[in-house]
Length: 157
Length: 164
Image 1 (tube, rainbow over the protein chains, first blue to last red):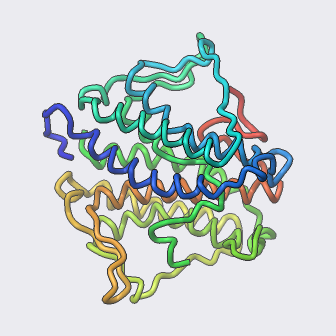
Image 2 (image 1 turned 120 degrees about the vertical axis):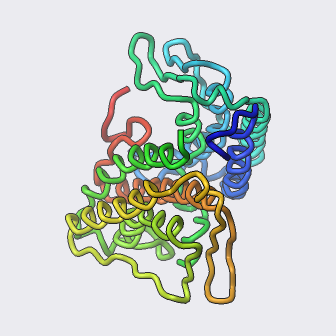
Image 3 (image 1 turned 90 degrees about the vertical axis):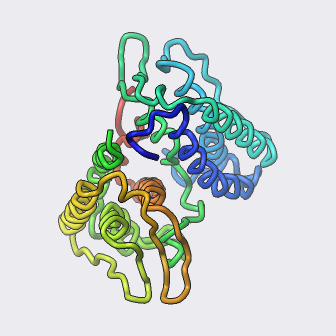
């Protein structure tokens, strides 16, 4: 990735490579979430295991919105969280969201990454950032359960 | 925009919630762990505090060799933990500020003596370290919840704080 590059599509391949790498771990973790533990939560204020796993499974679908639209407006959304019935359901939903994200990125030219993107609820704007900064947030997995195998340097522990 | 500038903005942004979280971890929870296979609170918090310092050896060196040893922090107080985080963040940002785009194309290795675990570009290892820190920060938020330490907003409201 060079800052002087003006060719059409140099940023997306790096994002795809990162998503593929992270996707392997996410898939492995989701495959291990048993359906009979979907209702479990470690603390009364916590999300349930099923809700958290669904959230992790669907986060890559945000990439589609980030690339395609200039904003996400909660007031215009009819959001229904995905409710898996089985581990297979959960993994299949992840695969769909993941594949949609990869396909979207494949067709994303460099110039879109400097366009602004906003998160809002009607009149209230929470933030406006360039799409490249938003995608960095989409790519992260802030709420992963501690059971997710740590990778890289933490493998020494 | 130069590559390092984007990283510096992202790291400064991600540092805000990490700083807020580390400042809430009382020393009486340092030896606690939620499962026999888990890290202790001190080890996990120390890891989160250390990780943005890794950019120093990722940028200024071409490898990390575990055979040469690696010291983990041993804070006694919350203030020591937060001070350590600030020092390591500053170490990492200092190295990133000095890195031009060509630096990120250089190769970097993780090894233990003869055994090489990973070889990648400096661009990839920096990105991976940000993801890796975010992973452990998420894990730390669960440890905090289990000990009834209020969890500050990270990417959005938590059950304790934040309105949207």
